[in-house]
Image (cartoon, rainbow, N blue to C red; front, side, top):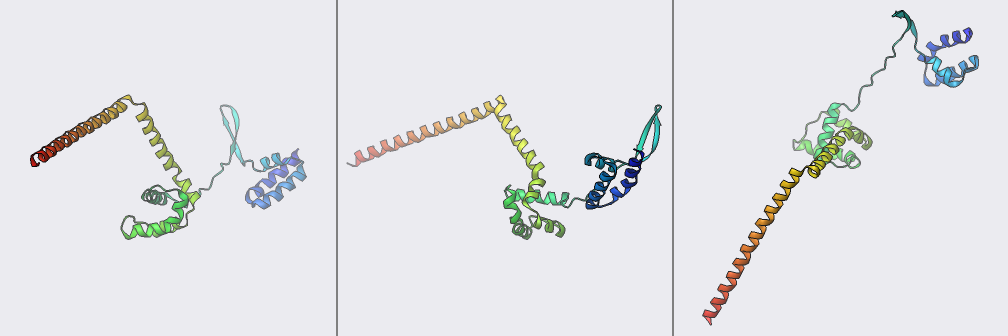
Length: 203
């Protein structure tokens, strides 16, 4: 058991630093030397380095090295997202499959008429953006719009005061149309009466 631990401890540093292909080779060597199954051997090699021990409330606690995640810089940053949102609105919210190939023609036209002002870097990114990426970037914005529309529909459907106001407005418009129709009928009847009187006098 002690020999197995010594082997794995010695190979842990190498495992962390080597490439993915080299890790596979190293993992196979550990399995052959120790007899561990593949899952357990991989877990042992990935185990964090113990820097020391701390005594907290009378208990001995391991002090492990923190695993630092490397932050990857976003290629499509907030500036690109803001420009994409504006272009999407200008294009009347068309789908991403139509928007992606349309940007190369659409952006120069908007710039010509002063509707939009983009940096060279942002334009280059937008000219090469795919439909799938547009969907991914606009997904939160579309979700917000869908929620707003849904809430608006529910408001109009469930709010009795709003429904009553709409019904009253429609009734008033219908009443005005009826009055207008009656006035037109009266004027038509009067015109026909005058026409017949004129014909009688002429004869």
